[in-house]
Length: 333
Ligand code: PHE
Image (cartoon, rainbow, N blue to C red; front, side, top):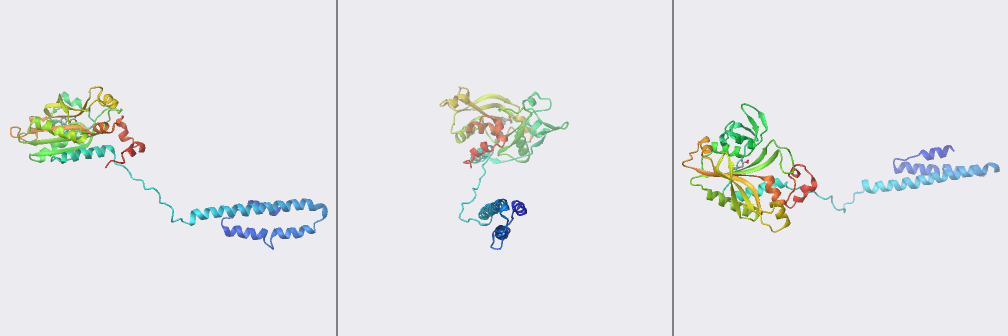
């Protein structure tokens, strides 16, 4: 009975321990053999009980030996025998973020006609974000862009558009100027499917002698053809303090599919950006003579352009980092 208790709690950690246990019980000079020899001299009336205990012990020991043997063999193959013929672990490649790839496409299209990149700070002073752009203090048009203020009087803000970069560039460079300024911008708006407090813009500026509204229109038509494959655009009169005249640009998307109807609310036209001829006051603010130079500017939200290109339904998806969303752009360069 003592042997039964011992055998029951036995748990070997190595195959060698198991082998020692096997020999101790089942070997020629082992415990079981000894007991079987002793069995012969047990009085007849005790033989039945003794025999039962003996058989029980034998079963327990045999079970232990077979089950641990199998367990050790299993761990052997997975842990220490490396199978060099197995295929490797799959190698997961990331994908470019849709905002990034659309930005790159737009930059590439304008670089073909001589635009270069320029950037500036996201935390901006009042002069570059507002005043130099013909938005003096207390001008009601400041309310067009709900602003995050970091400090007040003098104001320091999170830039509301990348037009601030154009001011910086004009302050430090002589015309001719042909720049694109992509970057993050911030507006104090509630987050919803259509708007966000942080988004990306790409703005363009062209200043030279004799730049006309026709040049602006032709440049935009070249752009929409290159990006969307659609060159039919219309310019609707609008208002921006830094441009005069100003316009919203609509691209004719067509009404060929159900989606076209839904996207364009049945009109076929989609608004994609704002634009205009740079206001003479802006040029004066950066010491460029408006009698000698003219220019145009335009600005668009990259999120919005990407929504159109990929038919994305909700602007919040860009920042949720949902792998299922991001994985869909794996084929993008
Ligand atoms: N800065 C404008 C905006 O953020 C866009 C724009 C740029 C409009 C240049 C006209 C010219 O809304």
